[in-house]
Amino acid sequence: MTTPVPLVLPHDVIEPAPIGWWPLAPGWWLLLVVTIVAGTLLIRWLLRRHRALAPLRQALQEHAEVQRQWQQHRDHRAATAALSALLKRTARWRYPNDDTAALSGAQWQAFLLRTGNGAFNDASVALLGQFYQAPQLDTDAPPFEPCLRWLQQQKQQQPQQPQQPQQPQKSLATVKQVPHA
Image 1 (cartoon, rainbow, N blue to C red):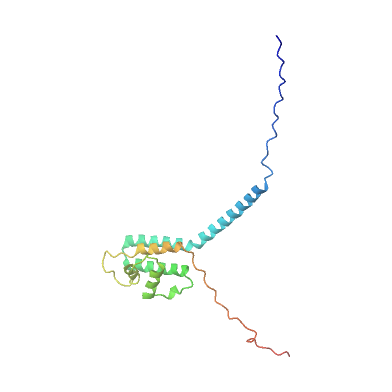
Image 2 (image 1 turned 45 degrees about the vertical axis):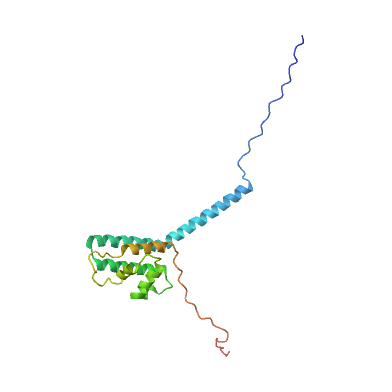
């Protein structure tokens, strides 16, 4: 018998060095820059929105305080007057281009109905205008719920920017010529 010839064993496979994560490929740099810019813009937008809605948060807190005081004292006139003043201040903040400070009576009620998107009905908005009168019934509560709905709806829309008064444009024809001396 013949002796078997030993096979020549091949050498082990040499693995390449692992690929490092640094330096980053250009696509990763681009993704990093886009993420930083988007994060910065998002934080800036959130801060602006938070500052812009600060008067509304204050109005909601004041609404809760008026309601708490009414539950303790049951003073219809004071609660309705406070709600009306609160809505008026919020309307002046939210609609600076409308002359809401001058509105009263039927015009104020029409404004609330127009801007309320269903928050008020005719009866609840009429109660706001009657804070100087005694309530019709003891069960008539000031319109807390419609006022709260109206305030919450104002959060969904950004307040209008006040319009700057326009300066009259001077034309060359209206400028007086000054003679040289």
